[in-house]
Length: 289
Picture 1 (cartoon, rainbow, N blue to C red):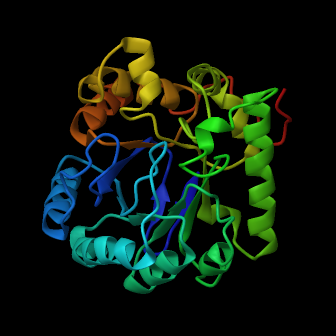
Picture 2: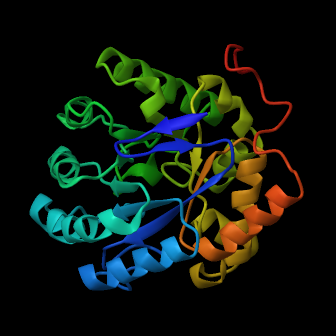
Picture 3: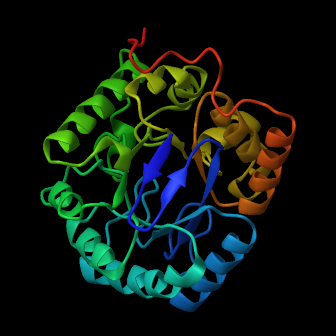
């Protein structure tokens, strides 16, 4: 299992850690801490020193209820950070849903587009398809950050997430984007209730039948607060537990705020010889129940 990105072919035979660089004043967990390019770059360097395999740079919050920012504002936030981080020796991802930002970030040298809308906005698919090697993460979400938590009615959340991601894979294939460039994210916390998020974790391995690596983002999410009763700044233990549970269920990439403790936990996981993918995972050619 590899992930082909612009400058790097990422080996996913062991779990990888994607470090979050929020260049925003209003992200749910660390809004404002790295809102300037200088602070964000300092944070990015620290995450790489702590063992981040990938950096995910975002200039617009996607927390529930978040208001959109203009294209110009988002570009002003992310482009200086991308430029400064290109020499850090790890793949760079831009976390955006705007085609204009995708085009500019790709032109600036970014390796991956991470889109919570799974390239559904007009022009987004074309932005990625026009570049022959840029990687992409397709995430499941209903609605947008302002409306997603009003759209949580599912008959079977796992089956419906799988069907959505399968459909998006087919659309990308039709546009000439090879499967080796794509990873999939079920969208924990995006248009889902606490129980639905936990159901996705319990049955996550069913998504492996889609045949592409899974990227999971549980770090500091509100579901962890609902389970533990802890505020966002006290969710590190639960975040690590969720990351390890996701890996046990077949995740190849975990997207986290707290890189160093997650890397340490995964080092112990590897030293113990625990599997990166469950032995009971269904074969990609089989059908999920």
